[in-house]
Length: 403
Image (tube, rainbow, N blue to C red; front, side):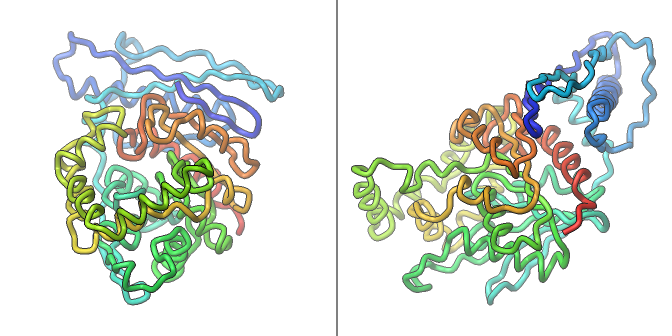
C-alpha cells in the first residue's frame, strides 16, 4: 500500500501482484497479459479519481480474454467526497518480476546518447534521450551518477526530452581538488544548483522539470530557489533529511563532530577510510542496506557506482562532502520554492525514515506525498515500475503550466 496526499486529502493506494498460473504453457505470454491488465486498471483508477490518466506504453500485442481466470478483479472505487478527511482506496495492480521482464522485452528501446559539456572549464558528462515533449533533468544522489537513472531514461524519453547529468565531482565529470580552490567550500548545494541552472540554459535551452533522488533533491530545490524562471516542477525521491547537519546535532556534540571531520579531511585516516569503502564488496554491502529488494543490487549496478569512484580525485570529493555539515536544509528551501513539488518516499528506507519525511508533505508547495511500498532509498532504480508512471503523471499535470 502507498499513500497519496493531495491538498489535505489522503489517498491510500493499495496494490496486488498478479498471480502466476501453472496451467499456461507460455510464461512470457502470460506475463504480458497480466501486465497489460494491471496497467490498464491502474490507468482507469487514476482517471476515475479525476487525476490525469497515467501514460503507459501501448506496445502489447496479445488480446486479453474477458473470461480469463488469471486476471485480478477490479475493486469498486467509491465516489470522492468533499470532506478533506475522506480516505479513498484504489486497486492499482502491479506486476511481478516475470511480468516486468516481459514488458522490457517488448518495449521499443529509445536511443540514449552520452555527451560532455564544458562548464566553467570543467568537463561534465550527461546523457540524453527523446526528441519532443517537456524537458526533464534527472539529478542523482551522493556517490552516484547519471547511470543510476538507466531504468528511467528510455521510458520517460518516449514522451519527454530527458537529460541526466553527472554533478561536478561525481560520475565521469571532472573532480577538481577542493584544496586547490581556495578556502571557500566548493562542493556545496549552491555550486551544484548553479550547475543545474546553467545546464538548462546552455544545453536544455528550455524550462525543465527536476527529478531528484537523495541529496539531488536539495540540489534541485536550491536550483529552483536560485532561479525560479527555469524550473517548472520538482519530484523529490527520498530527499536527504541531512540528519548530520550541524544544526541537528546537540550543542555538546558539535565540537566532536568538527574534530572528526578535520581528522578525515586533513590526515591519512580519511584516505584509508575511503579505500576501505571503495571496494566491490563494500559498495555491494552498502547498496544492500539501502535497497529493500536486494535482488536489484546487480553487478551492473555495483559497477555503475564503484568504477567512477575509482577515478582520480574521487577520494577528495568524497571526504569533502561527508565533512560538509553546513548549507541548506529541505525544510528551509521548500517554503522558498515557487513551482509545484511532489514528494515520493520508499517506506523501507533505512537512512531517511519515511515517518520523518512525511513532515515535508505538510508544506503548501508540496501537492502530493506518495509512500512507495516495500522500496528503499533509491526508488528510481529499485522500483522504476512505480516511479516512472508517477513522474509521467506529474509532468502531464503541469507540462502546460505557464511560467
